[in-house]
Image 1 (tube, rainbow, N blue to C red):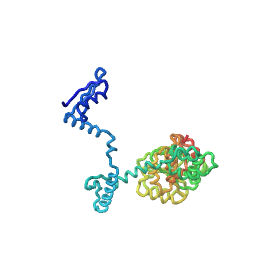
Image 2: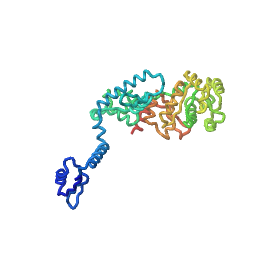
Image 3: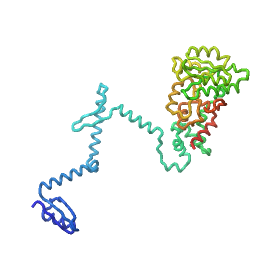
Image 4: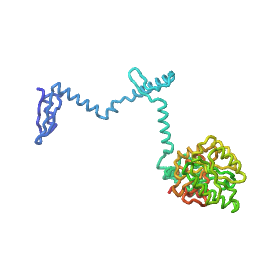
Length: 397
């Protein structure tokens, strides 16, 4: 007898009957419930037993638990250590530049990541962790000072900028508004008294990207100088120069000149600019609107750096509000040796974020002018630490 069917009131009784008739090695081929009774088909045939065991093995392999239960951790650790020793030895002995991809041992092959790939991975991890702080969240309820760093990070200020003032802020127990205290510290670091620079400068270079508000700022500076530094019969002591390609359209600058009753000249070559500046810088205050295309002229960068070594020459760099930090970094890197003062423009169209203010502080930039673009002629706002601090508090709300 190889197969036997049992019908019983319950599974236990049916299993006992199968075991009694077919023996303890019997396997269950089928179980079903019919009319309230349990029907079991069993077998002690060698082929049925082998087939049943194979199904059990396959089922076990498909279970996630085998990933852990069949894993020999101690042996894997030994393999890993041995593989590392082989890898280090091969790196030292290798004279080629090919990456190490595989090291073979007696009974195993282990794949390795090359050094350059690992460096790239660690760099990405470092960037991800740059502004991350790991702390016990329960500590933030004990003292309001401890949560200030987290609050400022949420607002967008960088960890590097916050860390510069963190010790002063946390250790000073007498300050009521710690956040405003931070804003004042950051504002003092950023603000530069540019009004005095305008008075003392014979030549003002206005640099910046196309559309950054250079021409409008040029008109505003001219208006300020006429209203505050020169009398009505001294307009001849102020001139505007357009430094751009021959094909450039400077009609807007010409219109500003007519409106202000000022002379507007245009030059395209660096030699012509140098000659014009040398002939007029002593007897006339010059404002030079530098085209984006001309900043890359051979020799211009060196000339600008040489000129700004003299206190009577100033480099004003226009940066529109909402300029991303990567662009700010590129611009400051280009002009870093010509001592640029930042003019934040188009503030009536958008606002400066905490992210932008942070990169200005990290690069040790100096902000001298705050300006809009909708009002063409009018007084410009010189940056003051109190105003900038209040501005930072307002945009953080």
